[in-house]
Amino acid sequence: MEGLRQRLTEFAAARRWEPFHTPKNLASALTVEAGELLEIFQWLTPEQASAVMADPDRAHRVRDEVADVFAYLLQFCTAVGVDPLTALAAKIERNELRFPVPGAPSEGGDVNSESGSSPV
Amino acid sequence: MEGLRQRLTEFAAARRWEPFHTPKNLASALTVEAGELLEIFQWLTPEQASAVMADPDRAHRVRDEVADVFAYLLQFCTAVGVDPLTALAAKIERNELRFPVPGAPSEGGDVNSESGSSPV
Amino acid sequence: MEGLRQRLTEFAAARRWEPFHTPKNLASALTVEAGELLEIFQWLTPEQASAVMADPDRAHRVRDEVADVFAYLLQFCTAVGVDPLTALAAKIERNELRFPVPGAPSEGGDVNSESGSSPV
Amino acid sequence: MEGLRQRLTEFAAARRWEPFHTPKNLASALTVEAGELLEIFQWLTPEQASAVMADPDRAHRVRDEVADVFAYLLQFCTAVGVDPLTALAAKIERNELRFPVPGAPSEGGDVNSESGSSPV
Image 1: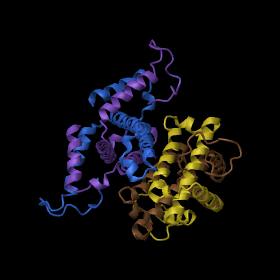
Image 2: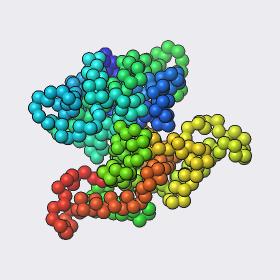
Image 3: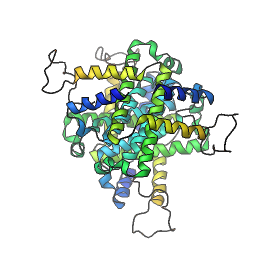
Image 4: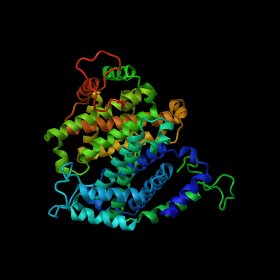
């Protein structure tokens, strides 16, 4: 991942695109691309959506939009100086406290009052 | 990254959330979280946006939303069987052909007719 | 609608929010609020989603997010000088040509080559 | 507006698209179209964004995406039985209490504890 992040930085630098790559613009672009990924699914039934990769055209679009979302996420992280792996690891740890496994022994009482029914 | 992806899968399995984690739902959740990241920036001036990490509250929110976007992207990839690193590497290669560096020797003529002015 | 649009303009002016209400910021805010509306539905089954208004809490959130989306859409239109009713009427007319009713007599041959399978 | 909402309903019925027009799908489509509107602005400078309607191509795209967002908002409202004008009027009234005009005489003390700095 670090190598790809580096290539994205060099790619933008070689084309002199850095002035466009502000945190605000990259957050917009990330949202736009996530919407394009969602667009593939918006009229599909749950069955069609689950079989999306069986259709070569749709499978290609899915991989393409995943790449766009991932690229803008990494470029956003570069722009604000955040390590996405560290941020994700910290979030998983917070969520393990916030959403204890049902039936598992709790270490510190009810930490789950906030919104335990909402899947992450 | 592979370790975090694995932890996310186990996290959802332990809480019996897999039935909710369809490709369509995860693509929705990814878009929603990207919107929450954008929300941090929506009323900021370019100057405020560039200094977003100097404000501890905003910095925490940025890291938190980056983690959410990244988590849903990885879970989406698990649900559809796509390797995000492979997808991104393939996309970078296509973009290197599609947006040649200005002034660089072109290897194969004008491959740039499509939309060369739009930064990636 | 015109009266509400006027009230939104006066509301923002009284609070000196116009400098924030650029077309770009309002398009961001519109997308963010649409994401918040989608968030209500993201983990619901189709059955739960269809009965969303039977739950008073969810019904309140739905009306609230509809209002936010509508408000930003009207404010965006004010900022760029677009009449949303005129724009929508023109689009419906284009779509009536683009997606002819199956089995209806066509007035001008096959106008439907573009993407006739995608519902609007 | 009511006439256009009616035409959208008839348009979908004539093409037998109602099964696709669930609240969840329409909320997705609304978010996707809002993202397409934002896409027009994502790489523009504030100056370019403010002059967006001076460019005929961009102006056409803006009107087109405004129409798409508006259409899905109205279709969503039809699907869930919400009157968007009533919802918006109620929201404006709540916001007038929540964000009092600075310097204006307050009718009921400090109603502004929640998040008064965030423009609507």
